[in-house]
Length: 106
Image (cartoon, rainbow, N blue to C red):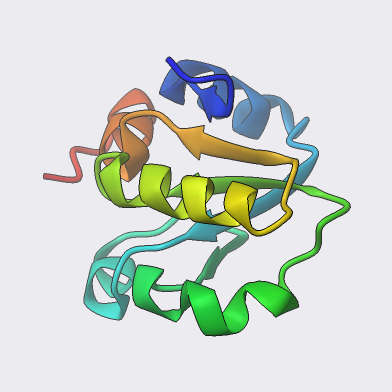
């Protein structure tokens, strides 16, 4: 696991305990978001990140997730290269997180 990753289990525990100290950024497409998304997450499809990253706060931790953790890993790398220090890729994505919550995403 990279230093900017968080396991689905740790992420889920923070959600459960309401101890998440940042913003959840979902980088899937709108149709995926419409099917299932986490409460309080914000939709920023991966291809919109370059033009919208100026809207994202650099002073908060950004928890980035997608379906399985691949797109979000690329987005995290992009954000780090563009001056964001506090990014966390949710390893396994919404699929792993939802499974821990009792919902099979795919």
